[in-house]
Amino acid sequence: MADRRMTSLWSGRFDVAPDADLLAFGASFPFDRRLLEDDVAGSVAWAEALAEAGVVASEDARAITAALAGMLEEWRRDPSLVDGPDEDVHSFVERQLVSRVGDAGRRLHTGRSRNEQVALDLRLYVRRRVRGLQSQVRDLVGALVAQAAEAGDAVMPAYTHLRRAQPVLVAHYWLAHAQALRRDHARLGAVRDEADALPLGSGAVAGTAYAIDVARLAARLGFSRVVANSIDAVADRDFVSSFLHAASLTLVHLSRLAEDVIVFGSEEFGFFELDDRVATGSSLMPQKKNPDPLELVRGRAGRAIGRLAGWLATMKGLPSGYNKDLQEDKEALFDSEDTLAGCLRAVTRVIETLRVDTARAGQAASGMLLATDVADFLVARGLPFRSAHEVVGGIVRELAARGRTFESLSLDEWRAFSPRFDERVHAAIGARAAVAARRTPQSTHPASVAAALDECRAWVAAARDQ
Ligand code: ARG
Image (cartoon, rainbow, N blue to C red; front, side):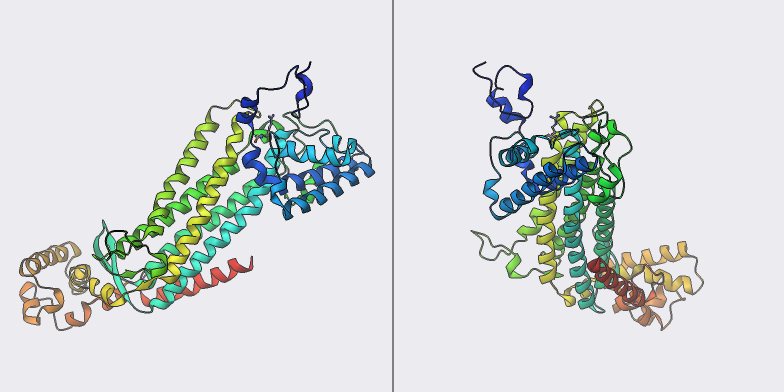
């Protein structure tokens, strides 16, 4: 019995102290201390619920809640105090509580299991932290809106297969990225809703034996509902999976935006110019101005996708009820959160400071990419589209062979290709005319883009007020 020491919340069951190495192997305190304030909030609410149910005397509950509040204050002032040999944050909080209020503290865990406690903490954490990510997404959408407004009527090529396809307004291009990010914002909102259910009252797996008013407890902790099944609740981490998915998809969008800016900012394209403050140089080549932050964003998207894939693999073989494998949820969640927050900051900074070379972009938006408009010109004069496509294909072939462009053709040259061309062809074939010819609300028509810009600006303002 000499070895028997009170080293954990469960030491009563065992004759000897646990193997130190394995205790450290199983510990989550090095990373789950991030749940401290959620654990304290949950414990305060639980103490009050126990008192209301008549399980714990009101004085004891008051002593517990006062001590917890005081401890949290101290820990906030000096985070280095959140430390010790504890297995996890729940053990840490309880040990500290008992050391301050003795037996009253020993009553807190009545009818409660760490299985539901960790589920609660994580739900509270997700609910509180996702808002911050959403406002970062909103700020980036705001930066894209500012670029769109700044772009005015500037044009650039839109690409398919990374080949010049059709001219578009630069504003339309920025608003395309804004749309993807707005879906991310909504997806993060759905993650908050998914996490919005109180798991307390589930006990270890079967439910608690005390008459806890869970609806009241839910309201006290700001949840709009209570979970439906205790077995499910102690092992349900779907909200973590959804978060990892939402974070991955947001990072996929950031990565694609980063890739665009890297490519369009290269010497070959030259549409964008990175601000010196967000670019990096080379130790060897004096001329270099590298987009390192954007490359890192593109790289880190892979990391978040890996977290999602790894987590789903962890979940897929679990028997029902709590299993320790679930402890893997936290590092996946925290790492994805940090990765996303850092990447959002970086991309926002780059977009806020980016300059568009409207002359270069505009120049690239003329030439062969007006071919669709030439075909449309013939269609408007009665030629079936398939035949028009054929005629214009022939023109393109010939112009390419002679190193010429549509804009350089005289009326006689046009008419040699088809008698349906008339003098209006000169005004109809140009980047600006092409943009103005698009008609649907989602198109690059200047009026559509102006309306989309207004709508997006209003969205940013509304998201700010939330
Ligand atoms: N540290 C654990 C986790 O993160 C807390 C729950 C422990 N429950 C248990 N029965 N060992 O999942």
